[in-house]
Each structure stands twice: as C-alpha cells, then as structure tokens.
Length: 284
Length: 188
Image (cartoon, rainbow over all chains, first blue to last red; front, top):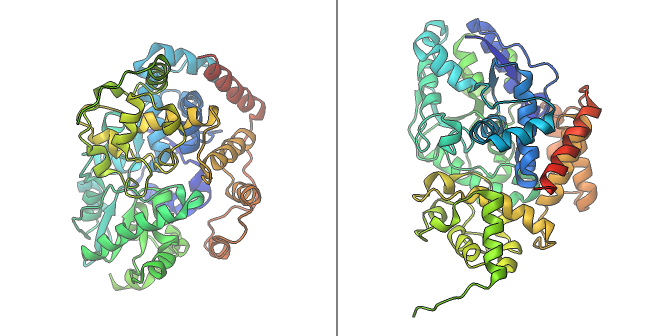
C-alpha cells in the first residue's frame, strides 16, 4: 500500500522529534512516506470551535490535494479533523457542495486517512514489525496513552475500540516491552487549555501521571503532540503543585519502536524529551 | 414537585437554532447524566453537561450562552461517544460557542476566543501554525507576560520552537478560502 504523508504543524514545531522518529522508523521498515506538497494547517480545535465550514474546508483542501492516495497522519488532532471532514462531506451532498465551493475543487470526502498506528499495527502488522526488532525492549513497562481524538467519536474515526484501544499496545508488545494495562488510555489531558487555562491541564494530566505510576509503569507512550507536551513538559510543575514525584519519561510510540529497531537515540530525537529518558533507555 | 413549563416562542426558536447549527439530536436527551459522569471538566464547570442540554431544551438562551462550561469543554468527545441516545453534546458545544460569541454573551475571563482568533489568523496568513508568533500575540493581548516564561529556554534547548515563521505558497488562495468560508457560514 502506498501513502502520502501529512505531517501537520506540531511535527514542525514542538513535536519535531515525532517527525524525526517517524521518518527514521519508516526508513528502517521500508515504508515510504512522501510529504504532501504544500499542505496547510487542518484548523485544529480553533476552527471547529469557531467556524464549522472552515473546519471542514481546511482538511478538505489537503485531502483533495492528495488525489485519492491514502493520507498517512501522525498527529491525533490532525487525524481527527481530517476524519471529521471526510465524515461530514461524504454523508451530506449539501455540505460537499459548500465545501467544494470554498476550496475551489469538488472533494467527495472519500480519500482514505490512516493514522501511523493503523499503518504499523494493521497494514504492516505486529508480526512483521517483530521480525525487524534488533534490540528487544525486555523489562520495559510501558503504559500506552491514546488520548481523546484517535478513538472518539468512533463513528467518525473508526480507529479501534473507543474505550479500550489496543493498537499501540500490540506494537509495544512487538518491541519486546510489556504493555501494562491501565484504565486511563483514553482520558483527556486538557489539550490546548495548556495555553488558555492551564489549571485544567494540570489537574487532568496529574490524574494520568498518577495512574501511570500506580499501574507500575516506568514510562508513558503517546501518539499525540499535545498529549506528549502536556505530560512531559508540564510534569515537573505538576509534581511541585501536587507534592508528588513521577519522573516518567513520555515517549512517542515511534521513538519506542525506533529503539527496538536498533536505531540510535539521536536519530529518534530523544534529546527533545524534557523528562530525561536516558537512564531508562540504557537500562533496557 | 413537578412543574409545567410553557416554552415561549423565543425559547422554541433558540432550541431550533441550536439544533440547526449542530444537528445534535437534543430532543432525545433522557437526562441520564452519563455525559456528566465521564466529562473531565464537569467537576469544575458552572453547568454540568446534562444540565446544559436541559437548559437548551428549555430555551434558556442567556443562561446557556453566558455559561463558563462551554469555554471549559475540552472537546474530548467522551459525552458524545457514551450517550445512549446519540446526542452530540460536543457538537452542541461548538454551536453554542459560536452563538455565544455572535450574541456578545461570552463569559468574562475566558481566553479561549482570543486564542482561537489568533490561531486562525496565523493559519490564514502563513498557512501553518507558528508557535512563537502565536504565543507572542497571545501574551501581548492578554498582558500575561510571566506565566510559562520558564518554558521558553527549555523549548529552545529541546528544539521545540522554530524561530522563523513557516513559508507556504498560496497566500492569496488561502485568503480566498477563509473569506468564502466566512461568507458561506453567514449566508446559512
């Protein structure tokens, strides 16, 4: 199967290590991810809260540019917006016409959108991934944190079980690590309230960190730039605010996979993580 | 004790308006409160999600459009995913946020509308997010110069910030797209 890659804005900014590790892992697996030329922002939360048609037109503009090729996405928020646009446009002829008028091209809402987790765990498959593992991550206890937007709402994303997704767990297990079961896989981290009302993020993220610790994990694995940023960059201030100590490295799933594939920490951007993972990495 | 409430025409209009803008299937709500049970911000909100739906059903325009809850909703979609009646509360909240702004009823103190405006202006101008520009504008407008300033050196050291804005061709085309979306929305 061939794909065209939509990085999304975060992968050029705060989540540059997600981008770097995605490309490194893709190369190691022989997966080609050519970038969609001239892509623009999906509009994110700001668009769907402000302007319903703009919130469909921005994703549609990108999806139309893919010319029917399957669009591969890493960011959970971009994934959610691209999927939502497809859902609305494909089911309603009036919306399709309105959006087509806005973007200046007829777009039918049928360009397939796949999250990299779906590509790795479904299109390639954990067995095939396991064959590429050079350095099994034995002894690593990871909780997989999916956040909100991959699995909800399920009729839009059709990603995995909405309450108990397991795609990332199967990949982590294929790497030889233990995917620890825990109840906070799809709890919300507070997302962009990190900027507008940080108290929301601190209390929600605190609960996620506390549960990860209680589950006996020694790291958290994520699939969303905003989840990763909130759990990682705000971890220290949350520890101070709530009088706790977590010290949990927060990886992107591509970084964990990359380590198992034998790639160097530098090639996976591990130095971008705020909670230093190197003691843990050298232990496994 | 039960009480019969007659909806005035204005109240019924409000229900229809929200339903039209969101297609949220609001009449189906049974008040089971499953949405509130799973809502990550219900504990802090001034109106619980199931109560908000009830207030909309009862046409309580001012209470609904002026509440804080719609500006604390994280759009996590847990409510919509778990609702046994298929009520799209998250979609309702998007519509309420837009109506709240249009009616000038936005609760004092929320910084979400300003953030959304700066975000979309950035995308219109540059095509992609530019975090340094976004945060600078946001801090200037909110006059909040000191929160998170400790994060900047960390982000620079960790390579999480691009100093230069993104360069994406097609500025004129983007401007047209935004303008057409706005016109089409207004003409609805």
